Image 1 (cartoon, rainbow, N blue to C red):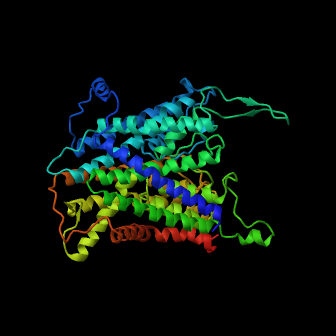
Image 2: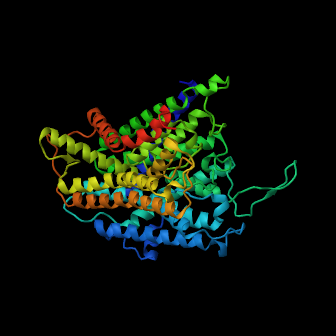
Image 3: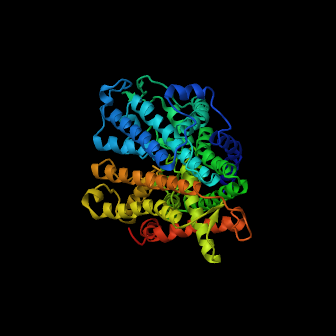
Length: 557
């Protein structure tokens, strides 16, 4: 292994684990009600919120769906009417209804799939007032659902799972907004633009004119990374020199993708009264992440024999930002697909097929290796429930987790949360390849084209948002198909998790005994990791063989 790459990867993992400690402590205080945002009582009274009111899982889910639905409708309207609204110095026209719908769904679901080029399609107002606001709200929604699930385990004999408006306010104003403000200032210091002025016109020495795209970018980039959103202000995303101008911004942005998801593992342990369990989840995610990172790095650094035969450097640098090189590009790819982020600092279509296989695998198991803020951890907890269920079957006793008995109703909810996104990926890929409207958007033939379609559906249903390129997704067919996939990937998991929390909160807490499976030791960590890998392999291995594996082996053109 290249020593520089090895040191950078080791440093990155160490920084993620180090950042998790203070963030976990702070998130726990916010979600447990130990920390209060300044003036929150006055804010709640002004908004008409009864902070003492408790919500059951149905009313909590309805509140989140109404808020997300309102945000979706607002963004769609803003995009379609941007041509006649202020904050549009470039006089960009409104977008088509199907692109507006796809984009609104994308940012409401924390996916940030983009079928457009930001600097050439969206006005400043659309980017700042529409997309950036949704980056905060969608991230806060995921963390709020995780808090509800924690209360389901911690409480007993109750239907009170907390207040969504209090949770969302504290998460947004006490966690996301302060971090984003500081991070945005750091990005501006490093050269990321933050302006509402019109695009300047440059006059190169060779003659002619060149339009330089700028805008209020730093504010959106900060929360896109911290909230695991990922949508780029510019079309090239974090490979654009204005979004990611220096090696320091590259490191900090990549770190920001994983920092809060890692910290939430430790916060989870405190919330449910078992810190060792939280650390076990963090170690499981870290182990899977490191395994994927090493495999992807090995794949990407294998010499390209075709180039070597021509006497050229066999390193595959095509599609990579040469300021950062192979190691940081691979690290970013693994981090962004593991964390449901979707931002890119290199083109994924330019990676080796087995490298993209790692990204596909992380998305297809449900974005649970760190995953989105909140959503990644509650997705991993569905696998935890499968793990304790299997362990219970092996010893012939009803499975338990954190003092709560796991019965048939809970496992049905787990099955829905795990299988619904998988069904969308596989059935959506079949539909896209079986009709002309889907196939007409594929630029590359054979296994590469199949991989692009599979990647797009995996990205949508996993609420990731990255793409391999080579697929023209800005058509009515693809905008609607991917929009449907994003909705299922978000809410077909979110709602069962809330229902699961309601079922658990109503149960009595059991005392730990000799037959209880410890959920914090190496045995549990290994068993959980195996369950995640096996479920993903059994579901998607045939599709992966037809896509990246076939492309790597050269079996299919």
